[in-house]
Amino acid sequence: MRRRGCAAEPAQASQPSPAVVDTHAHIFRRGLQLAANPRYVPDYDATLTDYLKQLDAHGTSQGVLVQPSFLGTDNSYLVAALKEQPKRLRGVVVVDPASTRAELEELAAAGAVGVRLNLVGADLPDLKQGPWPVFLRQLGKLNWLVEVQREARDLPQIVGPLLDAGMNIVVDHFGRPNPAQGIDDPGFRYLLSVAPSRRVWLKLSGAYRNGPDGNALAAAAVPLAVSAFGASRLLWGSDWPHTQFERVANYGAVRAQFDKWISHPADRAVILQTTPAELYHFPSTAAAAGH
Image (tube, rainbow, N blue to C red; front, side, top):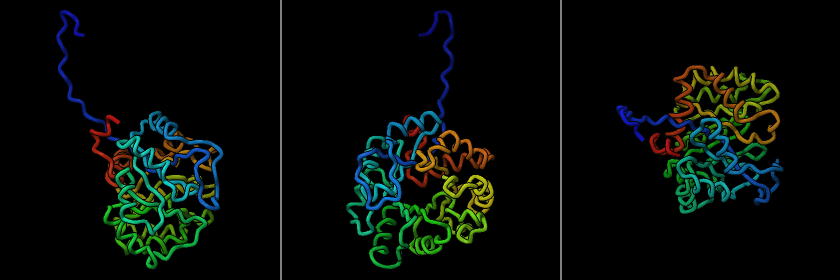
């Protein structure tokens, strides 16, 4: 209400603030159907409500939910979250390569934008044989990305065929270099060498997954990654709820760590805002501002 005798202040055009995107998080609860022979199963719940509280508490507008390995190809819990928060969330799912176009389109309609190849501890697939060439063509038609998690030594056998197939590729957790070799791991150097393709994005996330000196390795890797990829091909992810590393990591700490890695404000804005908004098909900044 305007006070009597006081002039009304001129209206100010509101400018929506850019949307910060967390490109790597997981949700789950106890009692969900598990994959066969999971490497690890959490004994706690990490629900959508819990995750949204983390986003809100740390000024993060949007998030990408990545299907955890222990849930296998049952993406139903993730998909339900995408449908509940269509403006704030996107998903990266795990599916059988024999999935039909109709099955993939149903996931796309829910907000999935890519598939994850979580190959840690698994046999390497021959991406040039079997169902894979047809499957990758289907992903290309949907404009989906392929997210890869595997130790760096094996990345040439995965990233190379994916590039040959014309895919956009996101590599998790600094490429998982061998802790003993660090930035001299040939697999990490291979990643740097394919940066000029402009179809590979490297995720600055989960430094603690790269050995007891993972933070030091990350600090050494970031300048090389920035130089090779440029900010427009780098991403940040919280890796919340930091499965298996819950005692050494939390959302605020990993966000602050990223700010130390990327000190230039312009680069930080590209990595946190511009690049993920485009890659993960988020709505416009104006739409996102209203959650």
